[in-house]
Image (cartoon, rainbow, N blue to C red):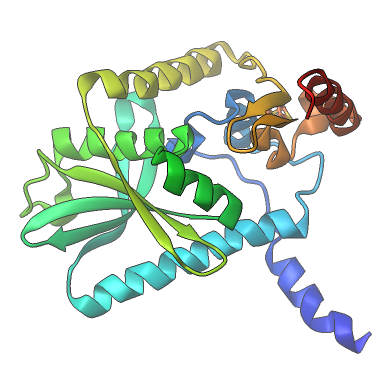
Amino acid sequence: MANTFLDKIINESFIREPYAKKSWWATDLNSCLRGVFYRRKGLPPTSVISPDRMGIMEVGKIVEEWIVNKVKQSGSLVAEQLRVEAPEYEASGKVDLIVDEGGRPILYEIKSTNSFSFKYKIKNKEPQSQHKLQTLFYLWRLRNHGHQEISHIDLSNLEGRIIYVSRDDLNRLIIPVDYSENAIKPVVEQLKILNDFWKKDELPPIPESVIYDEERGKWGINWVCDFCAYHELCAGRDWRARAEIEVKERNGAIGN
Ligand code: SF4
């Protein structure tokens, strides 16, 4: 009993009550749009996300706080947790950090990652597409509209970067995100899809449950589904078992 007490406190802290979201979130971009739809409706989850998955999300918050505190101590903090909105698309999000770098504001999105994925990113210097779209969303809004909380700062040429932090040793990799009219198109397209389906009250299509993992060079279960709590609603109770069989078959076919 004694040795499970603390564990219980921690695991219970992970439990979140479902609630209906008022808008789409920047973090929804490039994830499963159907899951996003369910979450905005505030539907109760049909499956439990395991404590280790919740733990990964918690580590993300701890790493973010660690970096923001370092910047605060250095006196270079412009903003943290800055709320950014796109009312005409019913979307919003929170910028992790804006740093004053020699008089220029630079936006940072902070992401923690496992060491395997970190090493891959060091080699490829490419951010995950979900992180890129999230950052582009912020740049799009702030460059065009500024922000009332930091209205004294010119954000019209704001630069954005993603900082990946290895969960093993806090090693860091910073990848710039290039802003352009073209780059912003998928952000707008996805928000339009979400709003169209929302108005019709129809479910957006489901993504593939099995995808090719570039980092590992083989097929794997789509990670967005791994973090989703609605499998029984759209994919069925045995979705994981089915997806695992498919992963095996596809990897067998490519000799992995
Ligand atoms: S189970 Fe997969 S397809 Fe269904 S909502 Fe969740 S992430 Fe989307």
